[in-house]
Length: 420
Image (cartoon, rainbow, N blue to C red; front, top):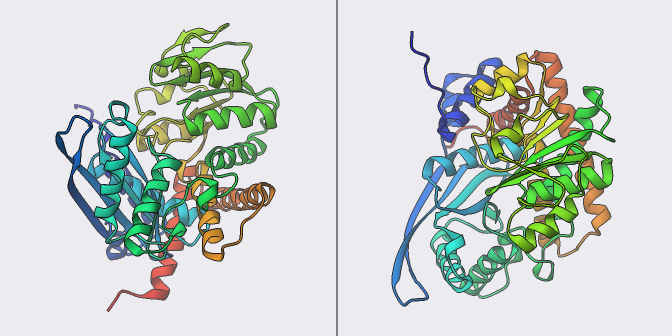
């Protein structure tokens, strides 16, 4: 009999993950349908004048998935492969991420189909401002708060904040998070996702009796999340970073290296490849190295049934959203590999985004230590909630995380009811 090919469609994967957890929680089929459907989807097509004087039409999306617990929250990505299904999946994962972290947000996501690498700063600004205007009808500090994602950053957020503020007639710092400090950003936001991942990895290490000091780490994707994670694991936990990679390829050294030096090298040359004292390695081979901790921090769909049997790490810490297919989850669970699922592992970013929003609304700002301490408290509590569910229900960490998150959203529905 021919083997049914596993789906790599991110939204199909997201829906299957809800189904799996929903069955374990004995959810009503009608409620399960609600959880598997986005609340609102906006597709916009808008013209932008390019530097050469030509007008180009871009397509963008904003999907608001669920707001049973609180306002919508989620990043905006600029990428040539952005699709409505991808944005749906990411908005769905944001819903469960906020719920598993225990913060009062629902999930949303946005994206524009473009190649930011081929656009000038002026073109990016014009595109961003026009996209912000197009989605301004559904975003705002009390209803939907965007943030940076793939190929967007604090500058992008500053443009969006300014655009919305100009339309309103007064400053609206709370409309986005991940802003520069001078216009209401939060200390600690740059490294928040990675710091949260480090705390989650530390807690996982305790459970599998792995001492992080000296533990070998391979990081796929040396962008914002991957580079900060490698640095924090190296500097604060004493782990040995043996491999990192970017879109051009990867590097490996059994002795390990200082990720700060690699970052400086990448900033100078445009890639980690060629860093002195290392040998080149492919992104695929990096995932299968004989290491203690593997951290996929790039894009979704990296771990599949094809390579899951060859993963050798004791812990897989998911810095990226959706890097693992359900089939790969089953394989790694059977093999005794502890996967810290994305909605838990990289929940530090949205948690500190929440802190930034709270600081904007109260117009009172916290120190870096206050931010880090509060983040650590939330990460440890979230990890322990998921671990408890794993032990009680005898499921893998992802199902446990989904069960914790979905149970929380379901409880909100039970109290709120179905309108009207």
